[in-house]
Length: 405
Image 1: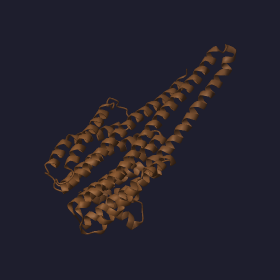
Image 2: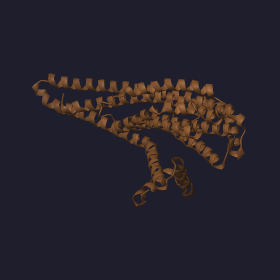
Image 3: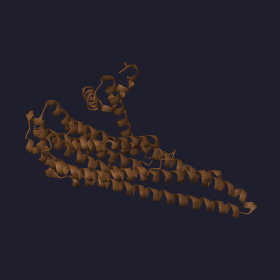
Image 4: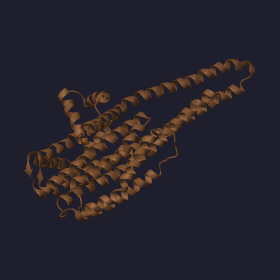
């Protein structure tokens, strides 16, 4: 077999190896989703528990901590299963760095729970700690999506990541609303933060919609609970429209309606993860079949060349070369088409990177919180009638002339 055909087959084998790595990473995403859901419930219960000075959700929070510990063990086991010896893993540096940050944050989780049980910190402080851990877990999912080399799998991962991020904003809204109702009060800044969480959900879910097929969108509609959504909107209006006192007795109802909605989102998240795993399996099987067919074809060509008598071998040689060239060209066209589609899919991820970098710049130079930095970008985008990513890019372009923070 010629050296050219050897590298042709090697290219296909590399593609299979990348798909197999994606399959393992996709399985990790499903495990992370279960743990994030447990943490989101725990965060909401902790907010009511602390804001009510221990009067509400004490026993439920204790049980949820046990559930969260079981989900955490799954995540740790999945991390242990990652091949950290593979120095050539695509995106391995960023992915493994994200995993290290998660493990560091998990080391502080028992202490956080102890302080919540002792009511030794405020609800807002507990929320910030949970938010930071969930953000670290979702960053692992983001790196998984960014590492995808197959356009169809990348599209599915982008949809899943944005759905998980939207669900996290829904979880933050549940925790914030629970805290506000349990405390029996809300101010203008709190209402603005509440509206920000609603808008953030809508933005993520719109990206999810953009990257999902008709079957997924139909499942998403079926998973919605109209009654829960209606009750949620009613309670939102109370929170948005009542400056000052809130009915503390509504904290349980708020938590219940938000939980109905988020549990429905969790069911869809499971479906998305299962579809992603199935997609990886199908793409691997397809690639293996194509590799087998290519190998069979090339071996047949080589066998025919060896069997040819010297008189016809000279004429057969160019035919073999043309056949191999056709295979190379066809594979090159396929990879180019995949690359073009992948660039289009990754645009959403790249936009997120730009916005995150611009937020970091504003946080450093203006001493803003992450939320305030995002609000500043969003306000500039609204004032200039531009996309937020375009404003973020403009902010980054000024990085070199900004004074030190």
